[in-house]
Amino acid sequence: MAGTGGSPLLRSPSPVMNTMPTPPSAAVFDVEAASGARRLGIKPAADAGAAFVLESKGKWWHAGFHLTTAIVGPTVLTLPYALRGMGWALGLVALTAVAAVTFYAYYLMSRVLDHCEAHGRRHIRFRELAADIMYSDLAPNGPLKLYHFIIVVAVVLSLLSQLPSFHSLRYINLGSLLLSFGYTILVSAACIRAGALSDVPEKDYSLSSSNSEKTFNAFLSISILASVFGNGILPEIQATLAPPAAGKMMKALVLCYTVVLFTFYLPAITGYWAFGSQVQSNVLQSLMPDKGPSLAPTWLLGLAVVLVLLQLLAIALVYSQVAYEIMEKSSADAARGRFSRRNVAPRVALRTAYVAACAFVAAMLPFFGDIVGVVGAVGFIPLDFVLPVVMYNMALAPPRRSPVYLANVAIMVVFTGVGLIGAVASVRKLVLDAGQFKLFSGNVVD
Image (cartoon, rainbow, N blue to C red):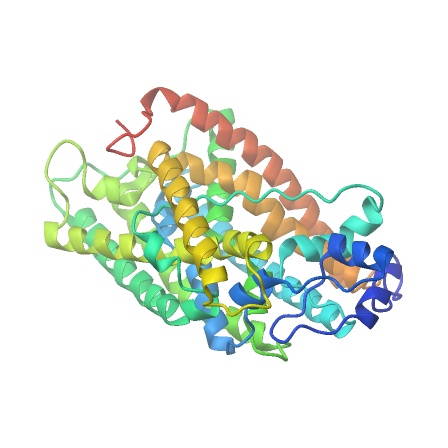
């Protein structure tokens, strides 16, 4: 898409959207529904998923709370393990580079959402944005397919999941932000104490002597970093902002990444310093070894674990909102009240069943570090590093020789390659460790 002209798809609002009234709380553009309405000459039915789950009432700091909960979680405890595969210099450079690229990519995604809204097409879901920007050009006559894989860890979420909307989680996510500070400080303090003990083995920061092993470990580490920084629900978070949303997401991202700088670098540096190349995929395993005493006070580690578990509830709630919106789009009636018997009954049944299924899968697959690498390579690298820059170039169409366009192409090429190699490295690591894994294990590795 050359020159300064916009994509033909984006130069003017859709004819369907010119004739459709904007729903009161969240305007939506569904490719299949809109095209079907145009053919039949009828107005699409009100979208209960958008109206109930993704209500647009939030302030920019509420979006910051949501973003922080979506990005900052217990996966930060894998960061020392990620540094192990690259060493001090390359590891910290990679951590900083991934932070910078994800911030830039999320900013571009927000710009694309603002651009589409300015042209009369407000998107509140990734699938709608992709369909508008990419799908109609690439496969205009084919069926739009959607695959959402949401894996959450939950036992007591069946009650919390009945909170009706994303916006209603704003104070829970503020609590999540504070919890992330809490366990990050506790775990980092424990690592400093463990590293300062006189009877610990000498620290070894050397990398593998095998070039192939060194390469695979480095790309596995990058995949872990991508997963830790991953956030596949930015459109849904931006949809919770009260209009006009333009500019508010930048403030929310700054708030989020201020928290990220503290909660990511502190455990990454202290954990790798304390345990070097012997650090486990979850640094808590290194602090609480199977053989021998804990390397930090029991009360401190116990409190850190409690804070981690509490934050997992908030994270699961945030990522579940996408599934809840999809379910309520089909099961709820937007013409009836949110708390009417007609809508409450299917909400309770479907959300409870969803939480039970997720808890079953999470308990069955206790492969924390290795699974994080696979998810990062296969899921988060395409979604958070590649798609935002591609969509920006397609939607806003900067000149092909402009620095922005060239930088976006470079990011796309580099991280596509990283994702492919990282996927191979992550699956390889999973296969190598498969003999240690047990389904429904009481430990991460038996």
